Amino acid sequence: MMAPQKEADMTRISSPSADEMPRGLARIGGAFRHRAYRLFFSGQAISLTGTWVQMVALSWLVYRLTGSALMLGTVVFVNQLPIFLLSPLAGALADRVAKRRLVIMTQAAQMVLAALLAVLTLSDAVTVPAILVLSALVGIAQAIDIPTRQAFVVEMVGKPDLPNAIALNSSLFNAARLIGPSIGGLVVAAVGEGWCFAINAVSFGAVIASLALMPVTGAPSPASGGRGLAAIVGGFAYVRAEKRAFRLLALAGWASLVGMPYTTLLPIYADLHHGGGPDTLGLLMGAAGAGAFLGAAGLAILGRAPGIRAAAVAAIAFGAALSLFALAGSLPLALGALAVAGFSMMTLVGSVNIGLQLMVPDELRGRVMALFSMMFLGMAPFGGLLVGAAAEGIGVVAATVIGGGLSALAGVVILLTMKARGAVL
Image (cartoon, rainbow, N blue to C red; front, side, top):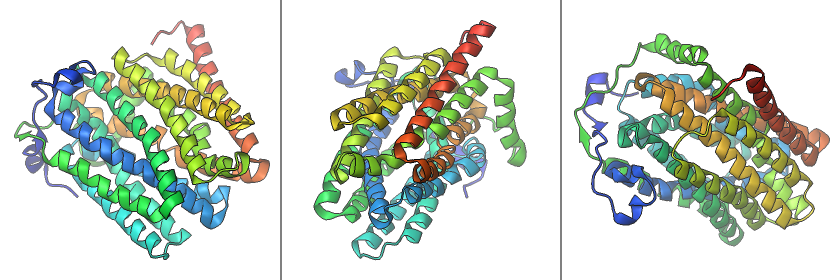
């Protein structure tokens, strides 16, 4: 898929020495001292907003076409299953090739797929099988893109500013999560889902342009630590030997499996529980995004990994808030509960991400971050399928409450285990 290592070396991002930064940005975080990161951040701001516009439109389109909770879960399953299956291979690839070039390729692929979905929808030719196929193709592109982008951050800012950059990325993602669904809900209500997909396709141009404008140098890439299967096995071996990394990944994977799939059911909550349409769905997704944005901003200010104890407490808070959301009898209470859930989940995920990035050696970064993607994002398709089936059988409220309870239980187990062993992390 990519050029040999020698050619890849010639397109690596320049070394992350600090350059002059606009005075206003200096108060936000050290990552903005680096021009490459400022370019990347700007492009991502536009692209991620477009992504969330598409996500709310796609959820509503599937629900409008099928009215099925199981089908909502199936779309999530086929979209994110490639992340689970391909992440180890993608991580090994990211450790061997020029990350900037690889990200440009994966972003361009997602642009084309979003444009195709827009054309099908605007021409009234879209079908559920077509949505499933396109969702799977997007998942393949994301399986390569996500660990590569995460491993690429350190090349832009260096390790001293890495915690701040990760937290700023999370803040940006969740700011887009706050703004994008609201825009998407309004656009769907006004002109339909197809234009949301077109907006997303155009938005990818911003991040591709920002990557193309980054300065490059001939600095060599880190040693890959093996090829083929040996490289993949090396990533698993590191996590198995490094108990802190293993605990962090396990907690993220469990929360993703049993808790995060609540987002699959939001169209049903918007319609049947709160009597709304796509605009209400946008509000629900935006509330979770607002809470997550505040959580990410807190991590940016903290500038370091809070540790697994904080992540465990966040898992408990997330589970409690998720259960409250499911049982809420009014929209304001539901929005408030989702905001707390978003804050808690962001604290959990951000703690895991920063902790892993700071402990992993550079030559294994792509592979370990691929395992993070595999656990946090790759477990979601199984959770989405399970929660969709559970909602069909026992109802959406019971399915959501059970998921929240299991998320909280994981946090309790971690805390009790740490207390019993006297562990500090």
